Amino acid sequence: MNPAPAWQSLEAAPSLWSATAAPLRELPPLKGDTQADVAIIGAGYTGLSAAHHLAESGLAPIVLEANRPGWGASGRNGGVITAKFRVSFPAIAAAHGKPMARRMYDIAIEATDIVAELVSLYGIEAAQLTRSGQVKAAHNHETLAYAVKEAEWLRAELGDTTMSVLDAGQVREETGSSGFVGGVLNAGSGGIHPLNYLHGLAEGVVSRGIQVHAGTPALRLRRERDGVLIETPGGTVRAKQAIIATNSYSDLTPATRDYQSTLIPFRSAIIATEPLSPNLAASVMPTRRTYTETKRMMRWFRMVDDRVIFGGRGAFGKADSPAAFRALQKAMVGIFPQLADVPLAYRWSGLVAMTLDSVPHVGPVDDRVMVAMGYNGAGVAMSSLMGRYLAAFARGEQPDVGLLDAARMRRVPFYPLREPAVRMVAGWYQFLDAIGR
Picture 1 (cartoon, rainbow, N blue to C red):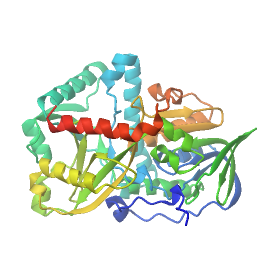
Picture 2: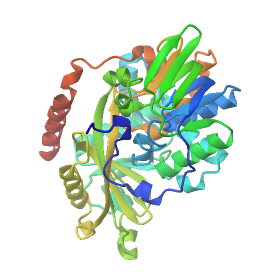
Picture 3: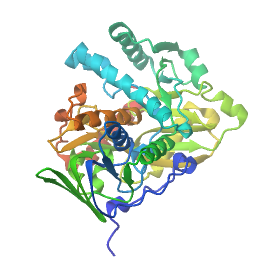
Picture 4: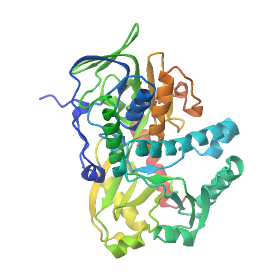
């Protein structure tokens, strides 16, 4: 018996998000042949935001999703909204100049703002959007000094007023943990129910008359004289342009597989506890912000409905990893010893798309096809924004996307060796974290 095609596979474990998500209407597969101005492959945040902004421009998009909206990273992430890139703004200034750092900073702020705009526009109350801020909690004085220096640079050079330095006592009050030496509060960050946000976007664009087809993998994408032809199992789409919005899951179908070699997929694991007792819930993360730590294999955590959600890198392979979940639970109890006897309710994972230069990329790859991908673990806000830029490119405009220009996108050298290389680097980082370096 032949194995199921990749796009029919399912990530093994249900998530907290899938268990608590508002229902999404049926989105039937494409049947027959149709036409559109722009065909979008992928119904995550990027694809649905692009569909929204294209329709706002008077263009007619169509969205093709191999599985169901939210099956990939848009429904599996931690729901953290933050204005950052994996590379710091001081590092951007050092390598590319202060004007570029300013532009990238403005893009990051725009990304967090657009989430609030879309939630408000489509009335997605179930998204539970908060803008209560994020605490970067330092595990040693060296990383604290680096975080403080970055915050001071942002204030002095870019006029940022959202950052404030916290001492050890203040971080303890913020987190309920005594395991940190200090930290930095970014008041502009927030959290969201990521799958409800995604479902709300899907409902919103469909209500505008935009076609969104689930269970519709793009088998082939062929450039024709006056546009593109996309073949699916049930029909074809002819369009003037196409958008590839498949991120770490680009290898699922032949039409997008070529773009996977520009990314380094990294499995990110998340655990969620059972609801805490009222007294315990009041002692853990009482300010209800989102939180990250400063270790190389960074962990993040937040409270949702009196549950602790705890996530981080370190899972490997193509499926959920019991060892990764055990490591996460051990790390969680290390930070919050009071959770030692609290059982876990959910364990799940998904793929993060890393790039060689640590920033996403967006824009045309030729005169017919545009891409946006490579969010490096900060995709909820950034992918929502990329839809706006993709629509601008589709209109023939040239928005200033700074270092995110798709022309800067590079293929990963020795791509078949990426998995052992990721394991080796991650293992080294885990060792350094374990010895406190």
